[in-house]
Length: 245
Image 1 (cartoon, one colour):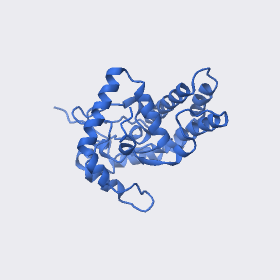
Image 2: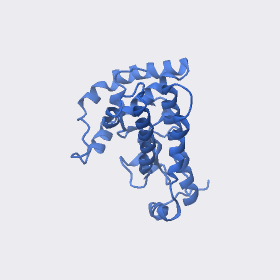
Image 3: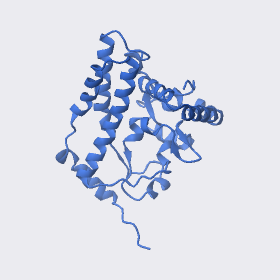
């Protein structure tokens, strides 16, 4: 059987170093999303959810475009969930948007998420409570500490190793990629070979924040407490402790 050929760490580095020379992010793609929904005659809730989900899709499409330019194909596969044990950090606005999106899932799917979260917090709740408070400024090892705790993401079905809210997975999940042998993830807590496109968060959050400012000035941000929700950050698993889905 022919052995699969994967990019080496050095090849990945070389390709990624070329990115700024061969690819320019089109920020207008992000702002066109919120401009479109700002003009729609519909409820604020629908505007918020639609812009949130479409902006996440723009992020994914940008990564695909970068991969095509760099001639890189991800080796991440369904059922591979090593990175789902990383600390996923989001702000309260993103958490509320995720919860509201889940509320709009089909009844069957929503019930599956609700039941899953109940089991999840029964199993991992005490571990989460023992985790130190999020401190990215002074604790350089917080990622390693979290990974060693082996607490899966609250949205990970550990029986199937699949995300229960894949289409609304946040930026840290969406932008973390592997382009070499998948075994590097199995053998390392934080493999050096993996790539993060998390810099796209700037365009994503910039457009979303501008939209929130527009709604705020218009006097209706619905279920978002703007701007307070933007500045409150925590692990995703902590935001879902209330299980209000």
